[in-house]
Image (cartoon, rainbow, N blue to C red):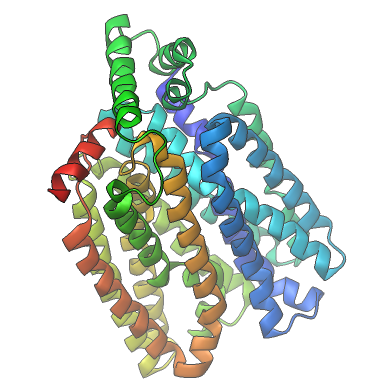
Length: 447
């Protein structure tokens, strides 16, 4: 089984994640008229999926540790299908909200499970690129949602925008039926023969039996070491303190630096900058989405070469500078040349996010936790990520009304600088390290 095919199939969860978070930005321009939404209810329609995502992420870690990665991904795919279809056929606001809540549950589970499954099935030397494929699929899903939004904007066909999310859900469900369970999960639950078969299927005929056995021995040794030392790892274990600080810290900074104000409200921002029509604003947003995809491809090529920390630091520095320019453009006024400055700085901000915090956060939280607690720890980080996503989405329009657009973007810039300092001081480099090596690295730091 070809590794790229496995990664592409598993990463379809990222495509669904991206599509269903991005599609609301274009659909909202028409939903507010169809359902007579007040500004508050526009925020609720946008944010209810994020509430669902936080809940889904909260359950995903423990469920995946108990029942396996693969079955939960299959269930998630079906949740996406049902949620997309319910949203598309809604004739009452409560039905729309229920559909978006279901979609949010799927987003939360897949945002944790897709990188976890990819990390546990990828060889160490290409793990960065394979896990980052999930982020590429997220950005592709966002871009596709923008393009579909533009295609249906002329007729205001928001039902098609929301309903088409069911198609990749069906593809993901079909693809996962052909993929094996995570070898690390199988070995951790005593299914060594199944773990061996899974590794053989994942590595293909090009891998020797000796190499397969060596990899399986490494997994077994790590599991035995953890079992001897602590049994079932508790989240209060001192050994998990710093990994959780790093994972949760990056989760928070990925959101409070403002990225999802662009994902959810880019057409609104572009309208404020001088693009008056819905179609023009959505098309400009699609341009930002294209840059997001292109720079994620750059990150995938670099992440196993230059390392995770370098990309994080460069990305955060560029994001901070872009936000300062964006705030300055709104300070001087919208329209004309300043409108282009706004568009350029917004695009640069997204580009820097796409080479740093975008892919690296999801990769690092799949690498820094020990096998016995990886699912639960990733669940904690993912809940924090979606919780602060919800906070940012709910507060953005109020911040703009309260302190103005310039001050809002300057605030995000200041928080980005804090994220840079946090990364510089606390985030480790994981490039080239096996997942079973990270616990030893954290133990050495504690000495």
